[in-house]
Picture 1: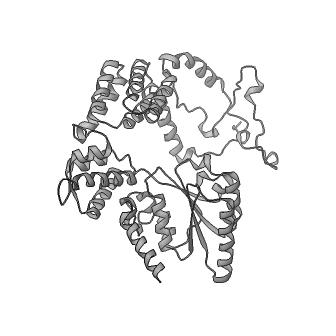
Picture 2: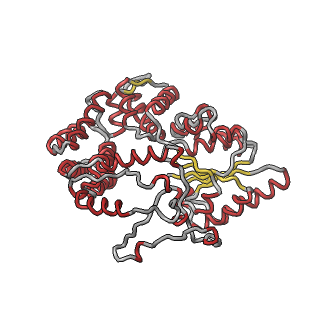
Picture 3: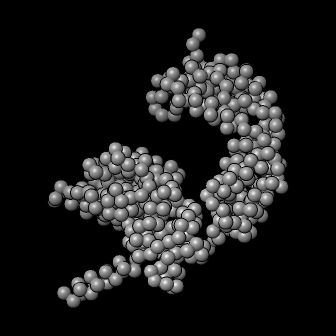
Length: 442
């Protein structure tokens, strides 16, 4: 009995000392902020959870978006037994042990088992293969959580037996709601400027913003009771200055920045870059905008522009400020001086328009269909396909779209920069493709 009392007391003290994000972890689906596309009324994932008919799933999303939180809520509402493992420490032996226990539980009490595997991408092939038989048979219902692209990190057989749900970064409204709950939990208040600063630097990560709030409240509490978080507290907690301009100006300045580079004005681009960095703007936000601009406004006129912008974005993560400001500046100058073309953007919009028209949903031509599996040839798959590498020029005139769409033009090269050098060959080859392939009507 004394041991039980001490254990209970220790648990209570740990709960009191646990991070704010852990203390605010929701207990019901309705308490989860964000992810309305998955958990809103009538959405498939919510319906499966509420009916306790969840099959194996992979929850994919950035840190702090609620993957573990969602799994813990499922644990509370399911009638099935819930087990939790972390891929950072679990072994093949642990997986097999959980499968054996699930088999016994099902046989003795007719109770199914859900296994939550956090950071499933950390499992190697052998460990994932050990899961496969139990998931395939339904003995274990897997909930895998990962921050990495599951198409690269999760074995194809395991992924094919799971439903993939992607969690998105929290929007500003969701972050603000988390901050309100955090302030209530901590018995604190906050200035509007402090809230806006914390929201603007959350980067969609709920756990990060609550951790920052906890630090800010501690700083405020050292001055007075009850604590009121100021912009200075938020700055100190985040290690970044608050922007000396409001939200409207924030969007106005990034708009001026983009339009200056699009207009090939390197000096103006550098000015707005310096203005944002001096104000404490998130360098990752600036880098993301440059990566987008490289494809949206430069495109094939300078294919290297995307590589330069991507390298600058990586430098922001790898080097960090203040040094990474040089990498951002180089990207700004490169993009501003690059020839401009928005033809990739226009081509994609045209392709989307075609793909959305029901009449354009033709079948894949026979000569383009997969012919690698047994029996595919008997179905006519791959028949008439000409392998480009067998031809002297590495190219052959043949159709690559449903016959209903052959002849439609989406990409029309500009006469700027590198794109101009490639335009002639592209147009000539497109015109030379006079027959769409063996499926074409005669």
